[in-house]
Length: 503
Image 1 (tube, rainbow, N blue to C red):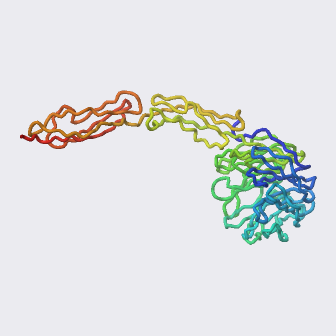
Image 2: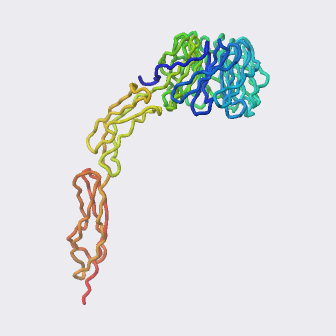
Image 3: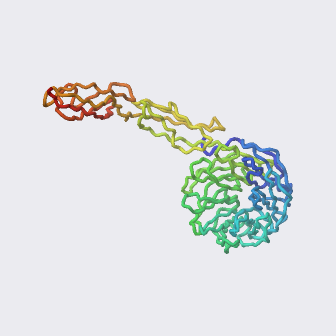
């Protein structure tokens, strides 16, 4: 296995018919926790993370009838994360204020439309307070509730979308500095785009076709052009549709990628740490999660699937074991569990043959680790890690997942180290002699010394040479030292001949 790669699921008990889940640090211990809506129990389960990928026993908090979507944010500016939960049969949203210990207060409810489903949050009116946007499945509209910064929200304002709106996400799709909304319309097979005005209101929808029975939606810049794009899970054709944004609020023609059986929820993140966004999709009919790696141009790889529980729906990402890579958590609607998949991705290594210069002061070179992008939970080693100057040496490098030692990528290549370091000359001392006549004298000087980083003879030559005639005055002697690898260094000293003085 290489990338994407996840360990076999770990499961944690929650309530009946878990629908959706969200991650956040609810008790401020630096570890990510999970909050899960339990549709048949009218509760939210909170599971505190231990920072090693495991979670404690659930604590439950009462909400409305058949809770579905959930989101988190600091709604009252106390520094603690709060929860907003959509109650599908009560036609309202429950807000539970967090106390920073992992516990939450009694719910306060706010009315929305008929059969509300999923929710997103953002500051839609630029007042510094988080607001709510909820899709109403039966009313074909979106409810927007503006927050007052105390944990309370105003009366809903509704905005029309398509038939049977299912999921919602937010982002600045036209780059005007205001948050916009994107909504999947299940019965229309469309996405509605509602551009925000920055005052909490939204323009009339524009729609474009997408998939067959559009459900989950996520947003990100999939092709690195600075514009937000969209990815949608379509349950009836078992695909993910990707549409690239143009930065004006418009989107191009969809490109589809195969997912599993009945894809439902979708999210995005960089699973293999290559700088490109990837996709993760729950397949509610296949009891699996599909991971599709992005290539940075808006295209995605063939899916790799990972088993989870029965009828997975909601999905969220987070680094649950603090190893620097994104993990996956899934709500399994037909089980009383959530599944957590820890990321064990190792990217294939690229190892071309190398020619290197020697390390300074040594007769060898250090083998650089492969430049292939890896997450921080991957250990890369090369054997040998240094290579002597001379003929090509075979080197093997390996990249190993820290949490799955069986997930290893290797490569073999040659490294040739060239000695480029010249010898070091010493003993270049100026000399002063007195001539034995009026024109000059024969001067004999000590040979300079030379040392080198590599063994082998060093050839030293000086001009003018020792034992030859030097005229009256100053003469510069130039010495060259050449090692066995033909590296040359040059140094000089001065021979001064003083005229003969008769007594």
